[in-house]
Amino acid sequence: VRVSVNNGRITSFEHRMAGPLADFRHGFGERSSAQRAADDPEGTNQGVFRLTTKVPYDVGVTSLSLKEQELAIPTASFRATYSGTLGTINEIVISELARTLNRDEYEFRRELLDDDRYRAVLDKVAHEGQWGRPMPAGTAQGLGMWYEYKSIVAYLMECDTRGPGPRITRCTIAVDPGRVINPRGLESTMMGAAMDGISLVFKAALHVDRGAVRETGLAEFQWGRMHDSPLDIKVHVLPPTQDVPGGAGELG
Image (spheres, rainbow, N blue to C red):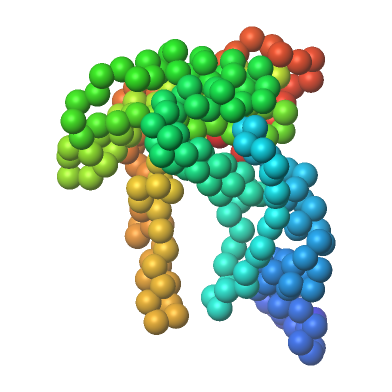
């Protein structure tokens, strides 16, 4: 440790660690977790993955496993655990199965759900969002739902592709948090999650050119802006279903 002092004030503070003991710069957590996964596939990350993820549909024998891959370029965490990625994969696969079998995506989900709480949330979003209503050419509806922290949420989005780029025009949300403590806070959190999803699907990306990230700051990183927000967005909170409140921070 080297400290510089001038007139009784610290002007600089330098801390150096001798030897290649650890690299705590950007991406350290991902490198260490990837290495641990490689050394011990049944280690911490695998345990967290299995304890925090679920396939809510009764599709027969289900296996949950995590295979992490260390990348050549250090990365940072995606803020949440595995919800955003696994929830997306679950719902894409279920939708594709329904289409392959020529089934209605809402009815197909409802038939496979293994819990009445799930069905109530799905029924609410389908009813309030008018699932299956006639849509003009170039527009469509989509469903998705997720369970986490003893809470359940479902989103029904309407997308319009007739303009210069696709955009979400309507968003209906149904959420069962077990027992809500702060209704307005819950609504805001679900709306914010909707904007996260819209940003990740349509805009947000980092591009790597010859080993360097093209974007240099938030001015170039295209997260959702006000004009990307659906003009019609509503949150419907279901009546209490349990005594203990569930979580909502990463639910949406």
